[in-house]
Length: 206
Image: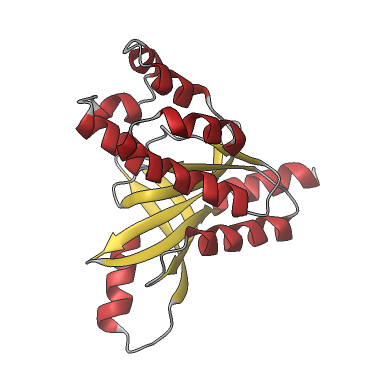
């Protein structure tokens, strides 16, 4: 619903406000309902703005889930340039990626922090260096202690096209967000999944 919300704001509301939030249930086939708070910053290129707002929300809630930083453009470029099936990234088929026997690709599979990513960036093809550097810069500039990087992660959300982030613990995702385009207008935003947040807070109380 992200793109729909931004289009409504741009076309139906006479406003100069760039920051919006909305609360709604999201339904997915066949019968899954997930409640969320959506936040959109229109005409904004810096993902840092969205991450900072999400971090502030979690600080208020007094817990610090793991923050993962990725770049959707990396698996997209690898798929196009090296003819790697994009489904391998979508479904995290690590063994198939490792079977290609590409040393720098193997390193990218296992990297989890910006320091190690900086050591590898010089070995990757030229078409990837700029996109990997974006992850490094974002991770190093984010004032949060619990960060990992996942350069080969591919979010199953079609509108995010570059830097992407998510907050999670174990298999529970509390928030997702990133950069996207809406009719050639760059925006950033994120969603906080309130069902998961409520369950987390309820366990802390009990």
